[in-house]
Length: 380
Image (cartoon, rainbow, N blue to C red; front, side):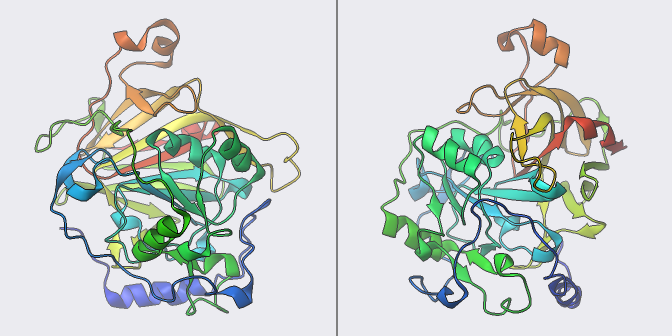
């Protein structure tokens, strides 16, 4: 059973974090341009879950479990760009996503992309922020519907190059809602959310394609009901640095068999339901990071990640870890994990390498820049 933070602690955390609304969040080129007076114009003034009447017994290709609603088979997954700067906390909806991606953006801050096979059970998701190309390239192979507010020019370029439509709330207001309880207490960019009903409204209003012939599983899952144990050794905790100001921290709970997420010394939780963010699988991907030419003067530059060459990775699950390698390749290829070394990637065909088997359940994927790879620390 997932652990629940007490309502008293939740209330204290909400009050303490609300006072951080003045913290700057660098977000150049795009981002939020909704006007204050246009808080609810053109949107549904209600939000919430959407009734699911279908049985939940189909294969969920993002968790490996037989828990997907039957009417969502061959349906495009939903991805939401979710803020992670300290001033935006607490977040909503992340305890219900199937995969959570976290990557550094500009200024050393991280952002997350929450992937859901089905969002109809999720009351609110957010706060919603702009789209970055390093996230889009990771989820693009799954043919998702991406919900966000604005973009960077480099994400715009990728959208155009790949002839890809997204649900941008700067354009399609039916997909977004502004939380009036946050107005005046948080910076404006930390006040916008989407939800089950608003996503359905946005899809209907835009006539967004929902059917997909993409059936690729996110990982090489074991058979449901079985468990694999990563081979390198025990792992009760794994920590690392995304940047000098943002860290990753996952701690194993033997009772639940899950890894609980921490950051800045605090438990990460979902204020929709007060549940901690917990995952069966944690992947740490060490990748080459550069900055886009011409962006160097802004907050140290806009990060540009190279997913084409592969590199070192760590797979953490079931109280253990395995050092392995990751590969992706071109824009439309999925991120995959193999037993071996970086030297193997240079000298062997993938057909001659063994793909890592992954336990069923929810997964977290963190992308760490190469120069901070040596900050990854594993406690047995």
